[in-house]
Length: 605
Image (cartoon, rainbow, N blue to C red; front, side, top):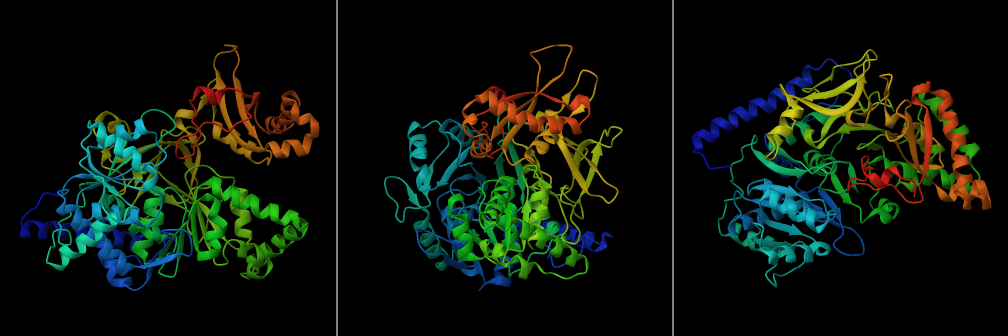
């Protein structure tokens, strides 16, 4: 923010503390039994949160991370605090005050240092998707007007080329990996040491920086399944609101170890697996990559795993595969029934009955929260049966991202949860069945879309954010998603068909790995042709059909037995009338969501 007088800043701070304390009071006044964890402290900015966490948890482990192959390195809150202050001071000394700094790379420690060093006193941080193409990254660097970019070694050549082309506002290239500056590339490590020297000599420009929590401090570009990326403008207040309200439904504390596995530029990972742990004094353990999940879990023994459905599904499948390989499926299913019956009597037998299963997940895992897309509730139910509390949350980049969460007191597997205290959720224009567009209102909702007032006005109306998701709210306040507004198939007799519902039904069959349901509008104008594109588990197909699996005609005939079962349970207007067989996965965006309007995804291959 632009500097103001001490008196003006004092008045601003008083107003900010009044806001934070009011949000705490709303939690205390919330009559719902599920709102029961009241250990959250008021914070007015991410800088304030970080400083208070440093005071409270100075000697605690903040990170388990790996700078190279080998054992994990532990980093305390004190070391992290000093590194952030040092890098922020160095940034200001480089002339980056009030400028935009892009950060890109793997989910690791130096990314987190650069993120807070930017937004806690320097300028606006621009997290970039590491999976984007050169052209896309260059467009976002231009759009964000970034003056500097902090990158890892895998992406170094990209930004060297971009700098050489000279048609962006980039002034500085900063490597997360190089230990010394060379070839006009600065070293983040060396900058931290420079900053420490500046602070030792009395430089407090970053440490004492004024923060306006209502200004844009983060510029995030969405990666939707259609159209161009939109820049979501988030403030310190948006993020602080999420940090204060979300742990009222689920308890996190300084004894927890969060296993960080998702791309950190996404708000789900950044807010929930990075900022919330720092707020609560927990430790963050960085996963080396998807193929190291099991190995890393055994090394750090996490207590909390936040994931997307694909990861939960993979873990669930691996668990049952191991059970079946030992010939113990019937034994385990009987144990589940015994355990679930005991739970009703408030007796927990999971530690004894499923000790080996829990050991494969590190032994200490107590909580899994799944978000980002729909998941088969049976997966969550199975994980709970094994003694790991597992349920869904709901978020969008525009909500910083948390908009709803299942409470640990009572969760519903098919629901995305309850609204947080201090936020509101409503269903706009509900049909007779109660289904309409889900709308959210609260201090966590974005400032708007960057340089795009038209798009902002489409989704922000009277303080309400229109999510584009369709769903309903039950009589206990739990929210259920039925599909995306833009994906709905409207039949010729005016009926609504939600592709996600049919895709969920298909996902209940192990042989179906991926599916995409859509309407073929090129055929008979007097009939509705609903198509299911299916990418099957080809190993399972081979096991079921033997040599017949070589014939696409036989494979489709086999898949029709599944589709026919689904069609029998649904009304005629929901009937799937054609199958597109796929030999390759669907084309996805960098969030690993299928691109519904990609022409190639509507074809057999």
